Length: 174
Image (cartoon, helix red, strand yellow):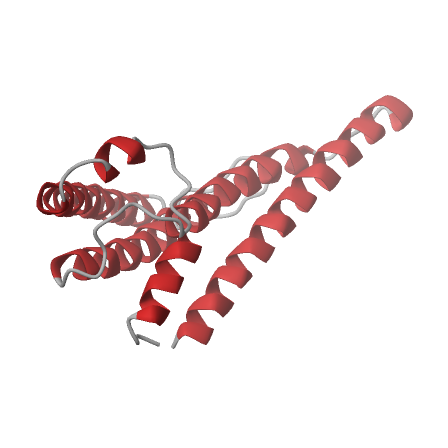
């Protein structure tokens, strides 16, 4: 199971690389076309914006897994163990609720925009909004797993993913 999860996150990282490379090629190519040939590709501006949105959402999944978001970890980690676990549990419940709101809102947007098409590319706008569902489901699983670890007492500190994996290996979980 852990190999499949590692493969999924490696795939997400490569997707981010491809999004960034695609944005560079589209924007730079369009700039060259405008200055050298006095023309451009209209679709490149719109699609590069889509790639940026997708890259941000996928990057948020990866950063959530690695505990890389801004936070006040030093305050939470300095609390007594019981209070720290309570704060972490409450924070995770609130994040799960926010993630549910993102999934529900994104699903509604996907349904509403199935037959709405982007002006330049002609692609369905539901493709743009659909990345929110990918983010919500992935983030939801990460947060639910961490909440489970908090409840059973295996996670009581804010740690990086490497420290988290090391702690799980030491406890015998594979």
